[in-house]
Image (cartoon, rainbow, N blue to C red):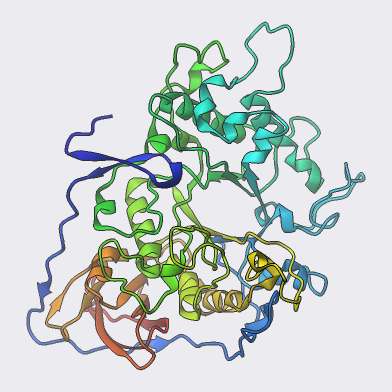
Length: 536
Protein backbone atom coordinates (compact mmCIF):
# COMPACT_ATOMS: atom_id res chain seq x y z
CA UNK A 1 0.00 0.00 0.00
CA UNK A 2 1.38 3.40 -0.96
CA UNK A 3 1.67 5.88 1.90
CA UNK A 4 3.06 8.91 0.11
CA UNK A 5 1.95 12.17 1.72
CA UNK A 6 0.50 10.14 4.57
CA UNK A 7 1.46 9.47 8.15
CA UNK A 8 1.22 5.94 9.50
CA UNK A 9 -0.61 6.06 12.80
CA UNK A 10 -0.86 3.08 15.15
CA UNK A 11 -4.32 2.64 16.61
CA UNK A 12 -5.30 2.86 20.23
CA UNK A 13 -5.53 -0.27 22.38
CA UNK A 14 -4.32 -2.58 19.62
CA UNK A 15 -7.19 -1.98 17.26
CA UNK A 16 -5.13 -2.10 14.05
CA UNK A 17 -3.56 0.56 11.86
CA UNK A 18 -4.80 3.22 9.53
CA UNK A 19 -3.31 5.83 7.24
CA UNK A 20 -3.96 9.50 7.94
CA UNK A 21 -3.12 12.17 5.40
CA UNK A 22 -1.24 15.11 6.80
CA UNK A 23 -3.75 17.77 5.80
CA UNK A 24 -7.32 18.39 6.90
CA UNK A 25 -10.11 18.69 4.31
CA UNK A 26 -10.73 22.17 2.92
CA UNK A 27 -13.21 24.32 4.79
CA UNK A 28 -16.24 25.12 2.64
CA UNK A 29 -16.64 28.77 1.72
CA UNK A 30 -19.73 30.59 2.87
CA UNK A 31 -21.96 31.65 -0.02
CA UNK A 32 -23.46 35.13 0.17
CA UNK A 33 -27.19 35.38 -0.38
CA UNK A 34 -28.03 37.19 -3.62
CA UNK A 35 -30.92 39.60 -3.17
CA UNK A 36 -33.35 39.89 -0.28
CA UNK A 37 -34.03 36.98 2.07
CA UNK A 38 -36.94 34.89 0.71
CA UNK A 39 -40.03 34.32 2.79
CA UNK A 40 -39.52 31.87 5.63
CA UNK A 41 -41.52 28.68 6.00
CA UNK A 42 -42.21 27.67 9.59
CA UNK A 43 -41.55 24.12 10.67
CA UNK A 44 -44.14 22.02 12.49
CA UNK A 45 -42.36 20.96 15.70
CA UNK A 46 -42.53 17.25 16.47
CA UNK A 47 -44.42 16.51 19.69
CA UNK A 48 -42.69 15.39 22.83
CA UNK A 49 -44.24 12.68 24.99
CA UNK A 50 -45.39 13.79 28.41
CA UNK A 51 -43.87 11.44 30.92
CA UNK A 52 -42.26 11.53 34.32
CA UNK A 53 -38.85 9.86 34.11
CA UNK A 54 -38.07 7.18 36.66
CA UNK A 55 -36.45 8.94 39.65
CA UNK A 56 -32.67 8.93 39.69
CA UNK A 57 -32.82 7.23 43.08
CA UNK A 58 -34.42 4.10 41.64
CA UNK A 59 -32.00 1.48 40.36
CA UNK A 60 -32.23 -1.50 38.04
CA UNK A 61 -35.49 -0.39 36.42
CA UNK A 62 -36.88 1.58 33.49
CA UNK A 63 -40.41 2.17 32.28
CA UNK A 64 -40.79 1.04 28.68
CA UNK A 65 -44.26 2.61 28.55
CA UNK A 66 -43.11 6.24 28.66
CA UNK A 67 -44.35 6.28 25.04
CA UNK A 68 -47.08 4.42 23.20
CA UNK A 69 -46.87 1.91 20.38
CA UNK A 70 -44.79 2.58 17.29
CA UNK A 71 -42.72 0.49 14.91
CA UNK A 72 -39.53 0.96 12.96
CA UNK A 73 -39.75 1.52 9.18
CA UNK A 74 -39.02 -1.61 7.15
CA UNK A 75 -35.89 0.08 5.76
CA UNK A 76 -34.24 0.27 9.21
CA UNK A 77 -33.27 -2.18 11.93
CA UNK A 78 -32.51 -1.95 15.66
CA UNK A 79 -31.40 -5.04 17.56
CA UNK A 80 -32.08 -5.02 21.29
CA UNK A 81 -29.05 -6.43 23.10
CA UNK A 82 -29.62 -4.21 26.12
CA UNK A 83 -30.61 -4.91 29.70
CA UNK A 84 -33.94 -5.55 31.33
CA UNK A 85 -36.14 -7.25 28.78
CA UNK A 86 -37.20 -9.41 31.69
CA UNK A 87 -38.94 -6.37 33.25
CA UNK A 88 -41.81 -6.58 30.76
CA UNK A 89 -41.50 -9.78 28.74
CA UNK A 90 -43.75 -11.82 31.03
CA UNK A 91 -46.46 -9.20 30.67
CA UNK A 92 -46.08 -8.80 26.92
CA UNK A 93 -43.43 -10.67 24.95
CA UNK A 94 -43.87 -8.38 21.93
CA UNK A 95 -43.45 -5.09 23.79
CA UNK A 96 -39.95 -4.30 22.48
CA UNK A 97 -41.18 -4.67 18.90
CA UNK A 98 -43.73 -1.96 19.65
CA UNK A 99 -41.15 0.35 21.18
CA UNK A 100 -39.00 0.81 18.09
CA UNK A 101 -36.86 -2.32 18.20
CA UNK A 102 -37.01 -4.75 15.30
CA UNK A 103 -34.86 -7.67 16.48
CA UNK A 104 -33.75 -9.41 19.68
CA UNK A 105 -30.26 -10.72 20.40
CA UNK A 106 -30.32 -14.45 21.11
CA UNK A 107 -29.17 -14.04 24.72
CA UNK A 108 -32.40 -12.20 25.53
CA UNK A 109 -34.82 -14.45 23.64
CA UNK A 110 -37.57 -16.24 25.55
CA UNK A 111 -36.50 -19.90 25.98
CA UNK A 112 -38.57 -22.47 24.12
CA UNK A 113 -40.85 -19.75 22.74
CA UNK A 114 -38.49 -17.62 20.68
CA UNK A 115 -35.46 -19.94 20.75
CA UNK A 116 -35.31 -23.60 21.80
CA UNK A 117 -32.66 -24.17 24.45
CA UNK A 118 -33.37 -27.70 25.67
CA UNK A 119 -31.68 -29.72 22.98
CA UNK A 120 -33.49 -30.40 19.73
CA UNK A 121 -37.01 -28.92 19.60
CA UNK A 122 -39.97 -31.28 19.23
CA UNK A 123 -41.19 -32.01 15.74
CA UNK A 124 -43.39 -29.25 14.40
CA UNK A 125 -42.18 -26.57 16.84
CA UNK A 126 -41.15 -23.23 15.35
CA UNK A 127 -39.92 -20.00 16.85
CA UNK A 128 -42.38 -17.17 17.42
CA UNK A 129 -39.81 -14.84 15.89
CA UNK A 130 -39.55 -14.11 12.21
CA UNK A 131 -36.07 -14.44 10.69
CA UNK A 132 -35.63 -10.66 10.56
CA UNK A 133 -36.31 -10.46 14.33
CA UNK A 134 -33.39 -12.73 15.27
CA UNK A 135 -29.86 -11.48 15.92
CA UNK A 136 -26.74 -13.07 17.36
CA UNK A 137 -23.52 -11.51 18.65
CA UNK A 138 -20.65 -13.99 18.22
CA UNK A 139 -17.84 -13.22 20.64
CA UNK A 140 -14.25 -14.48 20.47
CA UNK A 141 -15.06 -17.27 22.96
CA UNK A 142 -17.00 -19.07 20.24
CA UNK A 143 -13.83 -19.54 18.22
CA UNK A 144 -11.36 -19.86 21.11
CA UNK A 145 -13.11 -22.44 23.28
CA UNK A 146 -14.95 -25.14 21.30
CA UNK A 147 -12.54 -24.95 18.38
CA UNK A 148 -9.30 -24.12 20.17
CA UNK A 149 -8.51 -21.15 17.91
CA UNK A 150 -6.29 -19.10 20.20
CA UNK A 151 -5.97 -16.64 17.33
CA UNK A 152 -9.40 -15.30 18.33
CA UNK A 153 -7.76 -13.82 21.43
CA UNK A 154 -4.44 -12.90 19.83
CA UNK A 155 -4.30 -11.94 16.17
CA UNK A 156 -0.54 -12.46 16.08
CA UNK A 157 -1.20 -16.21 16.11
CA UNK A 158 -2.74 -16.04 12.64
CA UNK A 159 0.06 -18.02 10.98
CA UNK A 160 -0.69 -20.98 13.29
CA UNK A 161 -4.35 -21.31 12.25
CA UNK A 162 -5.55 -24.07 9.93
CA UNK A 163 -8.02 -22.75 7.39
CA UNK A 164 -9.25 -26.30 6.90
CA UNK A 165 -7.85 -29.79 6.86
CA UNK A 166 -5.49 -30.29 3.91
CA UNK A 167 -6.77 -32.62 1.17
CA UNK A 168 -5.96 -36.25 1.92
CA UNK A 169 -5.48 -35.68 5.66
CA UNK A 170 -5.79 -38.99 7.49
CA UNK A 171 -7.52 -37.52 10.53
CA UNK A 172 -10.24 -34.87 10.70
CA UNK A 173 -9.13 -31.92 12.79
CA UNK A 174 -12.06 -29.96 14.21
CA UNK A 175 -9.84 -27.07 15.25
CA UNK A 176 -10.02 -25.22 11.94
CA UNK A 177 -11.49 -21.89 11.00
CA UNK A 178 -13.54 -23.69 8.35
CA UNK A 179 -15.17 -25.91 10.95
CA UNK A 180 -15.89 -23.03 13.33
CA UNK A 181 -17.44 -20.95 10.55
CA UNK A 182 -19.34 -23.87 9.01
CA UNK A 183 -20.94 -25.06 12.23
CA UNK A 184 -22.83 -21.78 12.43
CA UNK A 185 -25.22 -23.41 9.95
CA UNK A 186 -26.78 -25.18 12.93
CA UNK A 187 -28.31 -21.91 14.08
CA UNK A 188 -31.53 -23.01 12.42
CA UNK A 189 -32.01 -25.79 14.98
CA UNK A 190 -32.97 -23.43 17.78
CA UNK A 191 -35.69 -21.88 15.61
CA UNK A 192 -37.16 -25.11 14.30
CA UNK A 193 -36.83 -24.15 10.65
CA UNK A 194 -33.89 -26.16 9.32
CA UNK A 195 -34.42 -27.40 5.78
CA UNK A 196 -34.44 -31.21 5.35
CA UNK A 197 -30.99 -31.05 3.77
CA UNK A 198 -28.25 -28.48 3.70
CA UNK A 199 -28.70 -26.66 7.00
CA UNK A 200 -28.31 -22.89 6.92
CA UNK A 201 -28.37 -20.48 9.86
CA UNK A 202 -31.66 -18.60 10.05
CA UNK A 203 -30.60 -15.64 12.15
CA UNK A 204 -31.54 -12.39 10.45
CA UNK A 205 -28.34 -10.65 11.53
CA UNK A 206 -25.02 -12.01 12.80
CA UNK A 207 -22.62 -9.61 14.47
CA UNK A 208 -19.01 -10.73 14.87
CA UNK A 209 -17.30 -9.30 17.96
CA UNK A 210 -13.86 -10.91 17.94
CA UNK A 211 -11.78 -7.77 18.55
CA UNK A 212 -8.39 -9.29 17.74
CA UNK A 213 -7.63 -7.03 14.79
CA UNK A 214 -4.51 -5.42 16.22
CA UNK A 215 -1.37 -7.30 15.15
CA UNK A 216 2.33 -6.54 15.03
CA UNK A 217 4.13 -5.67 11.82
CA UNK A 218 4.64 -8.65 9.53
CA UNK A 219 1.47 -10.47 10.58
CA UNK A 220 -0.99 -8.36 8.61
CA UNK A 221 -1.32 -10.60 5.55
CA UNK A 222 -1.92 -13.80 7.51
CA UNK A 223 -4.50 -11.98 9.62
CA UNK A 224 -6.29 -10.51 6.60
CA UNK A 225 -6.36 -13.94 4.95
CA UNK A 226 -8.18 -15.43 7.95
CA UNK A 227 -10.72 -12.62 8.17
CA UNK A 228 -11.49 -12.91 4.46
CA UNK A 229 -11.84 -16.70 4.62
CA UNK A 230 -13.99 -16.52 7.77
CA UNK A 231 -16.42 -14.01 6.25
CA UNK A 232 -16.76 -16.00 3.03
CA UNK A 233 -17.30 -19.30 4.84
CA UNK A 234 -19.91 -17.85 7.18
CA UNK A 235 -21.80 -16.37 4.23
CA UNK A 236 -21.90 -19.81 2.64
CA UNK A 237 -23.53 -21.29 5.74
CA UNK A 238 -26.30 -18.80 6.45
CA UNK A 239 -29.64 -18.21 4.79
CA UNK A 240 -29.82 -15.85 1.80
CA UNK A 241 -31.70 -13.39 4.03
CA UNK A 242 -29.04 -13.37 6.77
CA UNK A 243 -26.81 -10.30 6.96
CA UNK A 244 -23.35 -10.56 8.53
CA UNK A 245 -20.92 -7.90 9.70
CA UNK A 246 -18.36 -7.23 12.40
CA UNK A 247 -17.76 -4.66 15.10
CA UNK A 248 -14.21 -4.63 13.73
CA UNK A 249 -12.62 -4.03 11.36
CA UNK A 250 -14.40 -0.99 9.99
CA UNK A 251 -13.18 1.37 7.27
CA UNK A 252 -12.19 3.80 10.01
CA UNK A 253 -12.55 3.91 13.79
CA UNK A 254 -12.20 7.35 15.33
CA UNK A 255 -12.61 6.08 18.91
CA UNK A 256 -14.83 9.05 19.68
CA UNK A 257 -12.29 11.64 18.59
CA UNK A 258 -13.92 13.70 15.85
CA UNK A 259 -10.77 15.30 14.46
CA UNK A 260 -10.47 17.15 11.16
CA UNK A 261 -7.75 14.78 9.96
CA UNK A 262 -10.14 11.82 10.12
CA UNK A 263 -11.97 13.14 7.08
CA UNK A 264 -8.93 12.42 4.89
CA UNK A 265 -8.11 8.86 6.00
CA UNK A 266 -7.85 5.80 3.78
CA UNK A 267 -9.69 2.59 4.71
CA UNK A 268 -8.23 0.50 7.52
CA UNK A 269 -5.84 -2.17 6.23
CA UNK A 270 -7.75 -5.13 7.66
CA UNK A 271 -10.98 -3.92 6.09
CA UNK A 272 -9.52 -3.65 2.59
CA UNK A 273 -6.36 -5.81 2.35
CA UNK A 274 -6.78 -8.50 -0.35
CA UNK A 275 -6.06 -12.10 0.57
CA UNK A 276 -2.76 -13.46 -0.77
CA UNK A 277 -1.11 -16.84 -0.45
CA UNK A 278 1.89 -16.81 1.90
CA UNK A 279 4.72 -19.29 2.34
CA UNK A 280 2.54 -21.51 4.56
CA UNK A 281 -1.08 -20.56 3.87
CA UNK A 282 -1.76 -23.13 1.13
CA UNK A 283 -0.39 -25.93 3.30
CA UNK A 284 -2.76 -24.78 6.04
CA UNK A 285 -5.72 -25.07 3.68
CA UNK A 286 -6.22 -21.56 2.33
CA UNK A 287 -8.14 -21.84 -0.96
CA UNK A 288 -7.16 -19.89 -4.07
CA UNK A 289 -10.71 -18.63 -4.60
CA UNK A 290 -10.33 -15.91 -1.95
CA UNK A 291 -7.10 -14.53 -3.42
CA UNK A 292 -7.66 -10.90 -4.41
CA UNK A 293 -10.75 -10.64 -2.21
CA UNK A 294 -10.93 -8.79 1.12
CA UNK A 295 -13.02 -9.06 4.26
CA UNK A 296 -15.08 -6.10 3.05
CA UNK A 297 -16.07 -7.99 -0.10
CA UNK A 298 -18.02 -10.60 1.86
CA UNK A 299 -19.69 -8.78 4.75
CA UNK A 300 -23.07 -7.15 4.28
CA UNK A 301 -22.57 -4.16 6.55
CA UNK A 302 -19.94 -2.12 8.35
CA UNK A 303 -20.17 -1.07 12.01
CA UNK A 304 -18.67 2.39 12.54
CA UNK A 305 -19.69 3.71 15.93
CA UNK A 306 -18.25 4.73 19.25
CA UNK A 307 -18.82 4.09 22.92
CA UNK A 308 -18.85 7.25 24.98
CA UNK A 309 -16.45 8.13 27.77
CA UNK A 310 -17.44 10.27 30.73
CA UNK A 311 -15.93 13.48 29.24
CA UNK A 312 -18.58 13.24 26.51
CA UNK A 313 -21.23 13.73 29.23
CA UNK A 314 -19.42 16.48 31.16
CA UNK A 315 -21.02 19.89 30.59
CA UNK A 316 -18.39 21.72 32.66
CA UNK A 317 -15.42 21.21 30.34
CA UNK A 318 -14.45 22.45 26.88
CA UNK A 319 -15.69 20.48 23.86
CA UNK A 320 -14.71 22.79 20.99
CA UNK A 321 -11.05 21.93 20.36
CA UNK A 322 -10.12 19.74 17.41
CA UNK A 323 -9.11 16.95 19.77
CA UNK A 324 -11.82 17.56 22.38
CA UNK A 325 -14.44 14.89 22.93
CA UNK A 326 -17.97 15.89 21.91
CA UNK A 327 -20.93 13.52 21.99
CA UNK A 328 -22.68 14.74 18.84
CA UNK A 329 -19.62 15.55 16.74
CA UNK A 330 -18.39 12.04 17.50
CA UNK A 331 -21.69 10.40 16.58
CA UNK A 332 -21.99 12.27 13.28
CA UNK A 333 -18.34 12.33 12.23
CA UNK A 334 -17.98 8.58 12.61
CA UNK A 335 -20.74 8.15 10.05
CA UNK A 336 -19.68 11.01 7.77
CA UNK A 337 -16.17 9.58 7.47
CA UNK A 338 -17.18 5.97 6.94
CA UNK A 339 -19.96 6.57 4.44
CA UNK A 340 -17.30 8.06 2.15
CA UNK A 341 -14.97 5.10 2.61
CA UNK A 342 -17.42 2.29 1.87
CA UNK A 343 -20.86 1.90 0.27
CA UNK A 344 -21.75 -0.90 2.69
CA UNK A 345 -24.75 -0.40 4.94
CA UNK A 346 -23.89 1.01 8.35
CA UNK A 347 -24.98 -0.42 11.71
CA UNK A 348 -23.54 1.35 14.75
CA UNK A 349 -23.51 0.01 18.28
CA UNK A 350 -25.19 2.26 20.86
CA UNK A 351 -24.59 2.01 24.59
CA UNK A 352 -26.12 4.77 26.70
CA UNK A 353 -23.61 4.52 29.57
CA UNK A 354 -19.97 5.53 29.53
CA UNK A 355 -17.58 2.75 28.59
CA UNK A 356 -14.76 1.76 30.91
CA UNK A 357 -11.43 3.51 30.42
CA UNK A 358 -9.26 4.34 33.41
CA UNK A 359 -7.30 6.92 31.41
CA UNK A 360 -10.25 9.33 31.37
CA UNK A 361 -11.82 11.12 34.31
CA UNK A 362 -14.75 9.20 35.85
CA UNK A 363 -14.56 6.57 33.12
CA UNK A 364 -13.15 3.71 35.17
CA UNK A 365 -16.57 2.11 35.49
CA UNK A 366 -19.73 2.33 33.41
CA UNK A 367 -21.79 3.96 36.13
CA UNK A 368 -22.57 7.23 34.31
CA UNK A 369 -25.68 7.27 32.10
CA UNK A 370 -25.87 9.65 29.18
CA UNK A 371 -27.63 12.94 30.04
CA UNK A 372 -31.24 13.10 28.76
CA UNK A 373 -30.44 15.26 25.72
CA UNK A 374 -27.55 12.98 24.75
CA UNK A 375 -29.62 9.79 25.03
CA UNK A 376 -32.52 11.30 23.08
CA UNK A 377 -30.16 12.87 20.58
CA UNK A 378 -28.43 9.57 19.87
CA UNK A 379 -31.81 8.10 18.92
CA UNK A 380 -32.55 11.02 16.59
CA UNK A 381 -29.39 12.44 14.98
CA UNK A 382 -27.85 9.08 14.15
CA UNK A 383 -30.60 8.30 11.65
CA UNK A 384 -30.02 11.60 9.83
CA UNK A 385 -26.72 10.16 8.53
CA UNK A 386 -28.47 7.60 6.31
CA UNK A 387 -27.44 4.69 8.51
CA UNK A 388 -29.20 1.35 8.18
CA UNK A 389 -29.31 0.10 11.75
CA UNK A 390 -28.27 0.02 15.39
CA UNK A 391 -27.07 -2.65 17.79
CA UNK A 392 -28.42 -1.37 21.12
CA UNK A 393 -26.07 -3.00 23.64
CA UNK A 394 -25.47 -3.23 27.36
CA UNK A 395 -22.92 -5.13 29.41
CA UNK A 396 -25.73 -6.42 31.62
CA UNK A 397 -28.77 -8.57 30.83
CA UNK A 398 -31.37 -9.30 33.53
CA UNK A 399 -32.36 -6.41 35.77
CA UNK A 400 -33.61 -6.86 39.33
CA UNK A 401 -35.03 -3.52 40.51
CA UNK A 402 -34.47 -1.83 43.86
CA UNK A 403 -31.56 -3.91 45.10
CA UNK A 404 -29.62 -2.62 48.13
CA UNK A 405 -26.41 -0.76 47.41
CA UNK A 406 -23.53 -3.27 47.29
CA UNK A 407 -21.23 -3.18 50.26
CA UNK A 408 -18.25 -3.52 47.94
CA UNK A 409 -17.44 -0.06 46.47
CA UNK A 410 -16.13 -1.74 43.31
CA UNK A 411 -19.67 -2.96 42.54
CA UNK A 412 -21.44 0.30 43.25
CA UNK A 413 -22.82 1.96 40.14
CA UNK A 414 -22.73 -1.24 38.09
CA UNK A 415 -25.48 -3.47 36.66
CA UNK A 416 -28.52 -3.53 38.98
CA UNK A 417 -27.01 -0.67 40.96
CA UNK A 418 -27.32 1.66 37.96
CA UNK A 419 -30.16 4.04 37.22
CA UNK A 420 -31.66 3.02 33.88
CA UNK A 421 -33.84 6.08 33.24
CA UNK A 422 -31.53 6.77 30.31
CA UNK A 423 -33.32 3.99 28.39
CA UNK A 424 -36.55 5.98 28.65
CA UNK A 425 -34.98 9.05 27.04
CA UNK A 426 -33.46 6.94 24.24
CA UNK A 427 -36.79 5.26 23.46
CA UNK A 428 -38.47 8.66 23.59
CA UNK A 429 -36.10 9.85 20.87
CA UNK A 430 -36.98 6.87 18.70
CA UNK A 431 -40.68 7.55 19.27
CA UNK A 432 -40.38 11.21 18.29
CA UNK A 433 -38.59 10.33 15.06
CA UNK A 434 -40.27 7.17 13.83
CA UNK A 435 -43.76 7.48 15.31
CA UNK A 436 -44.22 10.85 13.60
CA UNK A 437 -41.91 10.65 10.58
CA UNK A 438 -41.50 6.98 9.75
CA UNK A 439 -43.13 7.60 6.36
CA UNK A 440 -40.08 9.59 5.24
CA UNK A 441 -37.79 6.55 5.60
CA UNK A 442 -39.16 4.69 2.60
CA UNK A 443 -35.94 4.37 0.59
CA UNK A 444 -36.58 7.49 -1.47
CA UNK A 445 -35.20 9.97 1.06
CA UNK A 446 -32.02 12.05 0.65
CA UNK A 447 -29.71 12.60 3.62
CA UNK A 448 -28.02 15.97 3.37
CA UNK A 449 -25.44 15.38 6.11
CA UNK A 450 -22.74 18.09 5.82
CA UNK A 451 -24.51 19.49 2.75
CA UNK A 452 -27.20 20.83 5.11
CA UNK A 453 -26.96 24.57 4.38
CA UNK A 454 -27.14 26.87 7.40
CA UNK A 455 -26.74 30.55 8.10
CA UNK A 456 -25.30 31.74 11.38
CA UNK A 457 -25.46 35.46 10.53
CA UNK A 458 -29.16 36.00 9.98
CA UNK A 459 -29.27 34.83 6.37
CA UNK A 460 -26.42 36.89 4.91
CA UNK A 461 -24.20 33.91 4.11
CA UNK A 462 -24.81 30.17 3.84
CA UNK A 463 -22.50 27.22 4.41
CA UNK A 464 -22.54 23.45 4.99
CA UNK A 465 -20.12 22.17 7.62
CA UNK A 466 -19.09 18.68 8.64
CA UNK A 467 -19.39 17.65 12.28
CA UNK A 468 -15.83 18.61 13.19
CA UNK A 469 -16.21 22.05 11.66
CA UNK A 470 -19.41 22.66 13.61
CA UNK A 471 -17.74 21.49 16.81
CA UNK A 472 -14.63 23.62 16.50
CA UNK A 473 -16.71 26.73 15.64
CA UNK A 474 -19.03 26.10 18.60
CA UNK A 475 -22.14 26.36 16.40
CA UNK A 476 -25.55 24.71 16.60
CA UNK A 477 -25.75 21.31 14.91
CA UNK A 478 -28.34 20.97 12.15
CA UNK A 479 -29.05 17.99 9.91
CA UNK A 480 -31.83 17.51 7.35
CA UNK A 481 -33.57 14.77 5.36
CA UNK A 482 -35.49 15.53 2.16
CA UNK A 483 -38.12 13.26 0.63
CA UNK A 484 -40.11 14.74 -2.25
CA UNK A 485 -41.54 18.04 -0.99
CA UNK A 486 -40.99 17.09 2.66
CA UNK A 487 -38.04 18.26 4.74
CA UNK A 488 -37.26 16.99 8.23
CA UNK A 489 -34.77 18.89 10.37
CA UNK A 490 -32.99 17.95 13.60
CA UNK A 491 -31.08 20.62 15.50
CA UNK A 492 -29.46 21.25 18.86
CA UNK A 493 -26.84 23.41 20.54
CA UNK A 494 -24.86 20.71 22.28
CA UNK A 495 -23.77 21.41 25.86
CA UNK A 496 -25.72 24.70 25.96
CA UNK A 497 -26.90 26.09 29.29
CA UNK A 498 -30.62 25.62 30.06
CA UNK A 499 -31.28 29.37 29.67
CA UNK A 500 -29.22 29.74 26.49
CA UNK A 501 -31.01 30.52 23.21
CA UNK A 502 -29.26 29.82 19.90
CA UNK A 503 -30.39 31.05 16.48
CA UNK A 504 -29.71 29.36 13.17
CA UNK A 505 -31.31 29.44 9.74
CA UNK A 506 -31.66 26.49 7.35
CA UNK A 507 -32.34 26.40 3.63
CA UNK A 508 -32.82 23.90 0.81
CA UNK A 509 -32.46 25.37 -2.67
CA UNK A 510 -32.17 22.38 -4.97
CA UNK A 511 -34.34 20.33 -7.29
CA UNK A 512 -36.71 23.21 -7.91
CA UNK A 513 -37.34 24.01 -4.24
CA UNK A 514 -36.63 27.28 -2.45
CA UNK A 515 -37.05 26.61 1.25
CA UNK A 516 -35.85 28.86 4.07
CA UNK A 517 -36.62 28.64 7.77
CA UNK A 518 -35.42 29.95 11.11
CA UNK A 519 -34.76 27.95 14.27
CA UNK A 520 -34.62 29.18 17.83
CA UNK A 521 -33.02 26.52 19.98
CA UNK A 522 -33.44 26.45 23.75
CA UNK A 523 -30.65 25.03 25.87
CA UNK A 524 -29.41 21.68 24.59
CA UNK A 525 -32.86 20.27 23.85
CA UNK A 526 -33.27 18.15 20.72
CA UNK A 527 -35.33 20.04 18.15
CA UNK A 528 -37.19 18.11 15.49
CA UNK A 529 -39.42 19.76 12.91
CA UNK A 530 -40.96 19.14 9.49
CA UNK A 531 -42.33 21.23 6.66
CA UNK A 532 -43.76 20.96 3.17
CA UNK A 533 -41.52 22.82 0.76
CA UNK A 534 -42.80 24.99 -2.04
CA UNK A 535 -41.43 25.14 -5.54
CA UNK A 536 -39.29 28.11 -6.41
